[in-house]
Image (cartoon, rainbow, N blue to C red; front, side):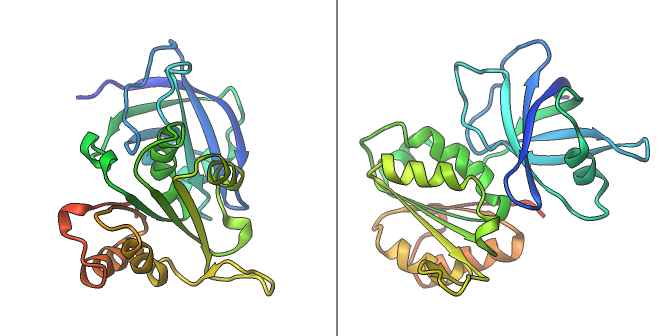
Amino acid sequence: MERRRKVKLERAWLLSPSVRSLVLRTLDGGPIDYEAGQYIDVIVPTARGLAFRRSYSIASAPDAGRPGEIEIAVTRVPGGPTSEALHALSAGAFLEIEGPRGAFLRRAADRERPALFVAAGTGLAPIRAMLAKEVSAAHGAPLVLLFGCRTLDDVLWGEDLAAWGRSCARLAVHVTLSRPPPLWDGLAGYVQLHAVRLARSLPGCIAYVCGLTAMVDAVVATLGRDAGLPSDAIRFETYD
């Protein structure tokens, strides 16, 4: 059985009206050994006095300077005891975690090929961890991110994405809004509408897809059917 570890909530802030970022640090300062793309289980005491377990992808890349620190993103679900408890926590509160777990990873050989990352909502979290590791390298294969949100207010880590797009010439960031404002001149509609075109612009690419099951199923199917990506060139993870 994996060891359960105590962590402290170092800091937290809203990424959007419904999504909160939480930075957790191990109490003993020991490292959390994980790879970008993996997740942890968080054991959360709730208002009812019961402890609930919920899985959250790690949204930060491994950092040798902060080995005992990770970031997660929590969507507040009205009436959801775990998410409401995590949104109510103050800095300095204590939690427990188990993990990391998961096989939604970029393998060493993957980095030699172009990559298409497709995410919606907090499905961006593990992909953000992957990209944070990639953008520090100026040279390498092209990277394209397609991120689907409802509105501009729902764009998570928008400043990070914009900064990475400016600083890393091999990264292209595309945000598509399902409810765009009148003057929006970016992409509109669900990610399924744009994934095939972007995949075709990246011959030999590997696709990484994360979000709710319905979105992931639709994107995986259309990438295989319409973009011709073989199944071993598509990595995906769902979180509902």
